[in-house]
Length: 229
Length: 253
Ligand SMILES: Nc1ncnc2c1ncn2[C@@H]1O[C@H](COP(=O)(O)OP(=O)(O)O)[C@@H](O)[C@H]1O
Ligand SMILES: [Mg+2]
Image 1 (tube, rainbow over the protein chains, first blue to last red):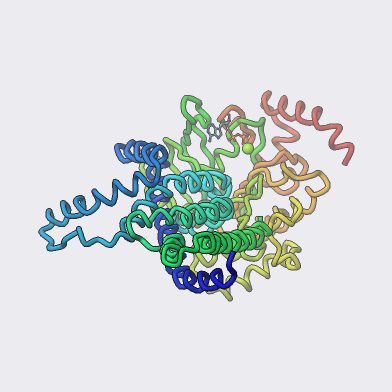
Image 2: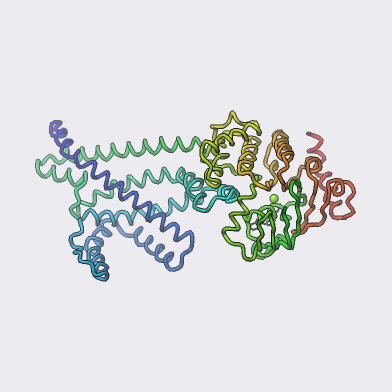
């Protein structure tokens, strides 16, 4: 292995790290949002929507992510065009950046797992906590924001940490639809200088560094929250 | 100040309250006794609408509700005029001792943080726990947790405090510290409804005792009447059975 090249590759890949992480953060937050909505639909037994959520989850869990990404890549623009057409909007969805398509595809896939995490973590908060809040005259919203959600979060935190790492890795499939992340960048560099091992080792080290950071952060945060309960 | 008429409640097929009437004056300390599974907890929870009776009327101070058509506003009013102390304490796990006492003052009563804090420290002082202000509930003994939960209840200045077996999940040596606090609360003149199996305590602090069985009020009256001179066969039997079963426990104390 050529150390000189390693260093060069490192410098070449480093600039792409912030935007890869940003992409992961966006997808991660969206997946929590969509996962929460799915969990609420299931918990409150909303007719029709509930059946849709169950089917959708089944589909997402059974479909390889790369297949779903391609389905989205080829169908999302037409779907968007259909709706903008209905609204008489003048927008050509075939210009949707591939990064957006990746965001939609990965968010949806990960959200089906997040929904389970979120449901489980809320169910783990004892009913007595809700009762105490209600008995003091909290509105349901106040009870959820001040008492229930913070406790559910402690429960969900480790799962959220691993979900974030799943997202980080899933983004590397983005190169199939021309989204450039750490992995795609290392491929580009490798094919330009033909030092393949060096480029991929650097990429792996970067993923690994991010993972260490995320795990450390969640552990730290978790132990802080755990000291409370 | 509190009037309940014909309170009925079922959980599914099971009739739990079969038409309960109750009238309480301001400053009363009313104790509910009776076998477990009789509906004592359920009555307390009807009063702040933590469970939903399907029939009955209730008048509490200036609030008047018909449980058949109670709305959200009335529900909040009932809850904001009462406070409950639970058998399992139910302190907020994500909040420190002082935050537990402060939170409803801030969220529900819209007090400033400072005001809420000062009042909370005053109350924690009263229950003897101001030095635990920054601890989380999990660090406290059961008796300490229950004292915090009493401070939390007092903090919202309720007209009525509902105590549901406040000492039943405590180790025997921790019971007295909690009873002492309840006694001092009773002396402030706030109206109290209490479910307990501590018969001596009930006798000492209540001015009215309600004996319930199978979802009905069997007998009610001043403690002397119920404990000493009851004419009611079922009351007498319950007390006789209770004392013989608890003799050993009482002797150990
Ligand atoms: N949430 C509930 N769902 C179904 N049954 C319940 C519920 N809460 C209480 N019950 C039943 O109602 C009856 C009265 O309960 P409770 O009021 O707790 O009695 P007590 O406090 O006198 O021991 C019991 O038979 C109990 O099993
Ligand atoms: Mg009970």
